[in-house]
Length: 125
Figure 1 (cartoon, helix red, strand yellow):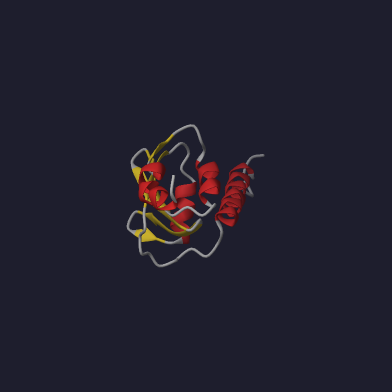
Figure 2 (cartoon, one colour; figure 1 turned 90 degrees about the horizontal axis):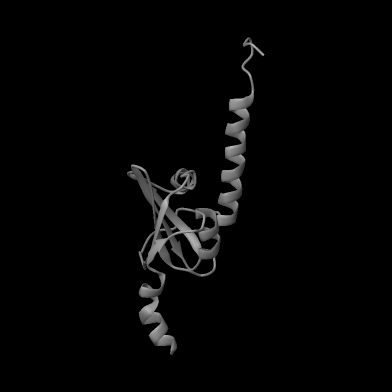
């Protein structure tokens, strides 16, 4: 397939519903030079992650966008994931790499878990 043919078919190649892979694994794969929009749905919540040339540049959750919204989406337990080829002309709001965001998300999750397990002072032990 010629390079021009590949580029014209890129939307068909990258679009679709993704099953059988975790969100973290998919985002790691997209880190390799993909430009797309990832739509994430979990129960009654949904949001979008925007990639340009493999970099996560923005996230939308509700009416807000940015890094903190990316974290909110990374907390979805078993989301439905859709990929769309996208050349959105978005401003880069997220400066951290997807790897750093995933590591920070894991740290935040561990901290929340520890807070729940730690008995409060003055409580019954």
